[in-house]
Each structure stands twice: as C-alpha cells, then as structure tokens.
Image (cartoon, rainbow, N blue to C red; front, top):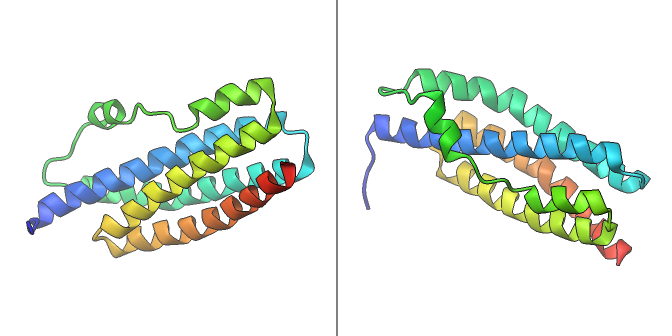
Length: 158
C-alpha cells in the first residue's frame, strides 16, 4: 500500500473536492431548470429540495476548496480543472425533460442521483481532510433523504 506525502494527499483532496463541487453545481443547475417545467406539486417539491441542498453544499464546499487549493505546493490552474470535468451527469434527464414523460424522467433521475451519491460517498471516504469529509457527509445525508423521496415517487408513478 502506497503512502502519500502531505502534498500528494492535499492534491488528491483538492481533486476530490473539485469533483464534488462540479457534481453539486451541475445538479443545482439542472434542478433549477427542472423546477420551472415541473407541473406536479410533489415532483416540484423534490426538485426544489434537491436544488437547495446543492446550493447549501456549494456554499460550504467552495470556501474549503479555495483554502485547500491555496495551500497546495503546486497549485493547478483553472483550465486544468475545467478540462477534467466535461462529463454531464444530467444530460439524459435534460433531454427527457423536454418531452416530459414523467415516469421515464423520474427513473432516469433516480439512476443519475444514485451515481452522484456514489461519487460523493467515494469522495467523502477518500479525503483525509476531516472538514471536507464532514461537509460531504452532511450534504450526502440530505441528498440521500431527497433521493429516497424521489424513489418513492417513482414507485407511486408506475
């Protein structure tokens, strides 16, 4: 098992945090748009909650990212981060939201949110920074509750 130097661990934590922030930003943007097109009250409520959780996570994670990034021995430029984060998790849902087949949309969102939760849990597990792990764990708990609500809606809708 390889042991990491402090600089390598900080760099790894910065990347993990960057990926978590990207997931939150993409999710917040998706749900902010989805709210506008949601007619069903229960769905709209879940979408609002999903957007709010991500907004809250971003307000807590972004300052940690800035702080950790400034403490890196070899800070990476913004271009490097943006080139690495081109995958769109919500692309399939964005496509479906136009056509509005609600059961299909919810099914895709359940699948997407499961992937997002898995990635966030991985980041929380791998980071050595206790503040980052704590903030991620709190956000994950809130997202898990909303995810469970969304899953129940998908069962009701079928």
